[in-house]
Length: 486
Image (cartoon, rainbow, N blue to C red; front, top):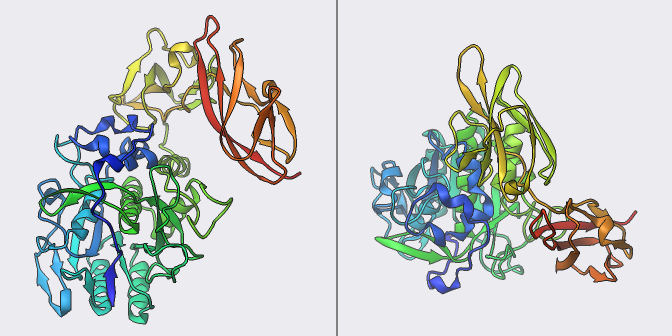
């Protein structure tokens, strides 16, 4: 018996804690986007600077999807396969709300002034109904749905459902979909770390997704095991519901985020294979639990900023300008523009990749029109870009951004267990203000103006602050220091 991953709808708005990374959502004017804490955490800003998923279809095999005014424009004609039926053009069959919620996470219409924004808001959803009003269904219907989705060219297949036993027929269907070029994403389950693995997430042919909360900590209900590949936000997730919006929690929601992320990568570089997208998602995930792959979060937390930065490295835009910069105050940075001519430096509110038009969050820096630029106090917290013009064609390209400009940064990335490192050796800043260090996470301590590492290897997250001292303001930065045995 297949059932949807159990999920909770009784989560109130008061449970939502917004994280600092919400500046990225300025690209959307949706009325409730401020409540979508997860979009900032996973870094949709980096992806949306390149694509919003146009041209990619995601099959959501679930309880159906819709109708919903914030989703309908991105729904293809659905298919009802529940209990052996075969009804074409049936997207509006979701009496449960589960499939509608997952589909909204992936592709709710963005920038329409209402509701929420999906992670890939210009992608298409193919809703295939295999679950009934009680959230249960037959594995045979899922087998048919997976094969159908692969045959019609879905690049991503979302399975926010699962059972306690492997279905050999479903495993073969997923293998068939993989061979057809689809990437299959599956919810890992919501029965807690001690529960037995859920299928098809436990199959090596899927990406198994665990779920985290607003503090980027694995949920106590998220399942654990060697089959977990990646984690994504899954607590108090606002999305479309049958006729309304609701908060829901579970690995079903987390799977939706990973499916949307995969769609963005496929859209940004259509030549990518499903194996390459899988590799990009896992390899660029942020390690948030035990070092390396672990049973709680797999390779770590979904990180679209890192994934798109790696994509840009693998597939550079021919002739695009680049910036050689560390992101430090008072740094002398240089743009590489050949065979183009330098045009203008820009100060931007968020990061982004190469693009042909001026980003809305970027402001031209007066008189900064050469390849060289010295980073000043006005650049703190911003990202730098440079534009360049092709001498022959006249077209303009805007570079990918520099790292965020900080005024205090780590000089040392690792320390040895039991060591004591003076703060002045640990961090650097052009300011002469007094420097303090505070431990955010880990078992390091600060004693006599020095960072004291614990006896055992690990990671310490620290916040360095320098007081205002003319001509510089007060500045701070948070970073990780590894405690590594020699």
